[in-house]
Image 1 (cartoon, rainbow over the protein chains, first blue to last red):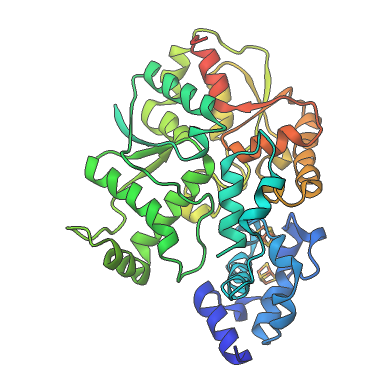
Image 2 (image 1 turned 180 degrees about the horizontal axis):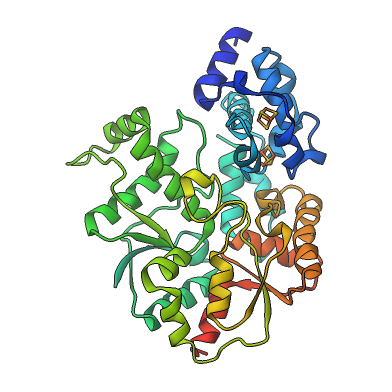
Length: 128
Length: 258
Ligand code: SF4
Ligand code: SF4
């Protein structure tokens, strides 16, 4: 997809307006996955806004967001960074052959106590 | 009191005890839970994107069943609760989603989020009442110091879930107190356990979950309760020896149902 269309698509499906961001960094400060990410929630916000989206699409950070919504709850400007991360992830996994998690990987990841909730959640997040 | 009941997939498999004890406790409190016919899995995670329609349908169907029955639908699993409540909120507030879902499902009367969903804890607080529970307690849990773990799904996003104050909740502490125990508040009670990363990278979930239990321990908790099967799994597997159980275990014990 062309950069401009890509940005529009991400803004459309997330419903986020990144221009509301005042770059306070609170979202990243509260993010439980901060240490696991190379791009942090506030970086998603300004990089989408500036159209610098390909590095985000190639980043493993997409699969480290826990959808805990702490960044959404605690953002003083109601920017909702988690929705933007979700939209970038969807633009990746909606492409042919780009699923992050494949069903045949699952048996090797399970133990006898693992709740079904973990499987369905991870498949919903990481595969289309 | 009669409510519809949405158990969800985990309560039919790994968390059968959560289902069984929730039902028995409800019965003992004079609540009849009628399982929704042919319910479908909610998918575990609310589909956040505005153009996700098909993935929202199972939750909409459950909410429509509640509307038809004329009673709220009760959930026990935090994840089901989050998905049902947020999807229903979309049906109330997002015209585009509402329109697309109705075109897809073609109900006789279009659905606009009239159904109501209650978490079991909300049912205890708002319908049964913690005072009634206090009266029905046969074995008060006197002297026990219990920490409530809320996690994310019950509370956030606060405006949509409208469950409790998302940063300083009290429903589970009030529940613990009603059973005669001492509720221990600790800073990490609404931080994430690491969730579904349990599948891919347990180093992360162990780090997140042990921080939660460490926080509970430092505040003096001797045991921790949760309403979420995935939180329970992560907290129990993180290597800390603090006991973690479903909230229904306490209720079951306090009501003398053993
Ligand atoms: S918390 Fe909100 S305003 Fe602050 S940097 Fe993050 S998105 Fe921007
Ligand atoms: S929703 Fe994702 S990005 Fe936001 S705080 Fe939670 S893990 Fe971090």
